[in-house]
Length: 258
View 1 (cartoon, rainbow, N blue to C red):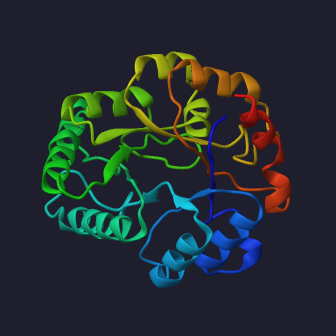
View 2: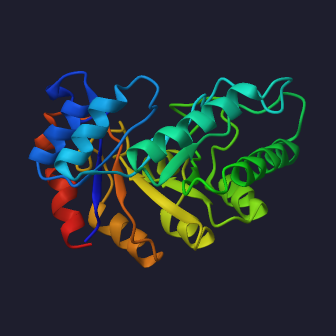
């Protein structure tokens, strides 16, 4: 049975804008884990208290900026500052991993050179935060619908970068929605990324709605994830088309037997 983490940016918004209130709503709905995006727009005291009061685990959060820094650019200070802030907040909130993105890349450089810049950038970040106890996951996201121009839009790009960095503290966030939207076969991609996937997220295709709202066979997809050897949490990063508690019923049922 997989642990499911409700994304509080998209789910349990019925509880209001405060992240702590959304954590409490998720806990009341039976969740023992949540994930979120940036920490810089949150009341960390309220959020931390809600996590402590409910015993809910924060499984992932995002370092900014995600798309607005240029690689290599003339100034990567915003990336470093955003990562350091995310790590500090992750430690404060007991979150084990921070999500990294590639940005859009640098025009005029071929793909391999751009990826090498990422390797150097992330290797430095891993070394600089060696004593933090916080890990990182690089997320490839689709360029067809949601993130046009993104550099790492294919799982193989993330595999290349993570293998080149060669640290146990850097892995891949494999998002089934982004992968399938790019036309990838999850079984093939997960086999090629064996041992490197440190986090998984889900949403249905097409539409990025809740599992069961699109065309994916979720029992089959979670069986593929299980066969790949991944047994960590699964983040529910979807845009619900129905109220939050209703939107999670199908994936909860499937995950219970996965």
